Image (cartoon, rainbow, N blue to C red):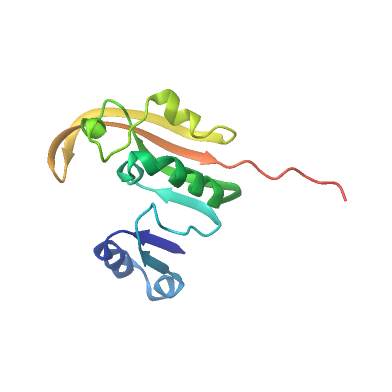
Length: 145
């Protein structure tokens, strides 16, 4: 298992929740998404985090994620929609539905749900506009020997 976060506190919280066996299997790193070296993975989960990638660096991070998912593996996570309260922030990236779906071109979208409602965040009340996605990377083609 590989986990990373820009904050040591997140790694500490994760470690505290794991059994001793799982803790021994965990490779964790304190690093931002823009700078992490992602290992080849069957699952990349980006829960409520990708929208904090600087807009100018999102494309490179997204390509890194796509490249890390093994053939037949999956991506799961959320993307911020254009009607979210945070969408107007300069340090946040947000997508229209069409642009969010386009990110998965060539993949099989197993789940793509749009959520929009008023709620809260650590910073207080906000309007949420999210896309929840689970997508499977294409399998390698069978090759005759």
